[in-house]
Amino acid sequence: MRRVLLALSLTLIALPASAQIRDQNWTNCTTSNDPDTSIAGCTTLIQSGQETVSADIATTYEDRAIAYGQKGLWDQAILDLSKVIALQPDNADAYYDRCVGYGSKELWDRAIADCSQAIALKPDYVTAYNNRALCYNAKGLYDLAIADENHALSLNPRDYVFNVYFNRGNSYAAKGLYDQAIADYTAAISLKPDFAVAYADRGRVYEAKGLHDQAVADYRATLKLVSSGSEEAQDAQAGLKRLGAAP
Image 1 (cartoon, rainbow, N blue to C red):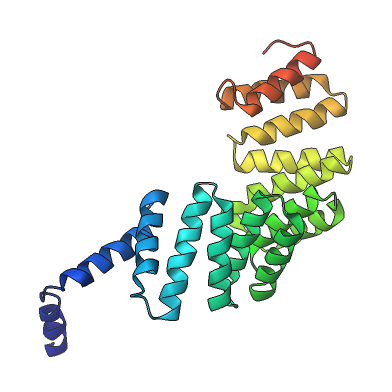
Image 2 (image 1 turned 45 degrees about the vertical axis):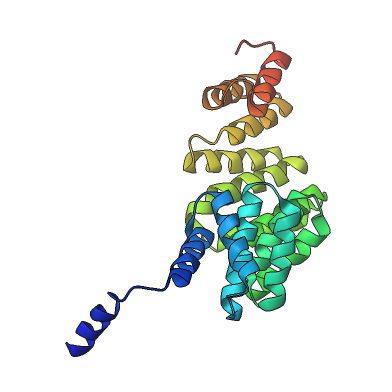
């Protein structure tokens, strides 16, 4: 009981102003949902030189990198993640996040290398397998992509599984394996009924197979789920036009 009372009494002691400011910047850096607020807090901490613990320094760079990524500032994100990796070479998340950054810049080989390193450090890293598969797809290496997607599914990714089915559907479609693609798109839609792009892509596969009615139904379903003028809406409208069907 005495220890509890002592701990409670210590929390009543006011922190120095500098410590309060540091704590506010730390909160902004590591917990804010607003990327600009996070970037400002992390940058202040980095420039202050007050962080002396290696793990804390890495955290400020990593969280700033995530915020940069949310804003699409991939060069800055990659630079910060490289600093994290220099400090923590066993940080699987930093390699994965840099994989996403390189992939967003269409630097596929660098992205594949980083996702591969993330997997080496964390063999059950479902999203790393899935993102490496996306990079393989972009390079036309569909068999490698399918192998990664199969492995991701074997890890029982739960909330993420619809994305893996969708991406494997794209791999099968690219190989002309339309029945397998349709099965995977259908699985993705069953798990996420508002998955507009899965309807659109399944519609394209149905169209390629000459299944007019099914393609029309999927294109129309896409239009119900997306805003007019969006890329998905334009693709669905173009598909309906090709098929001579009304929206």
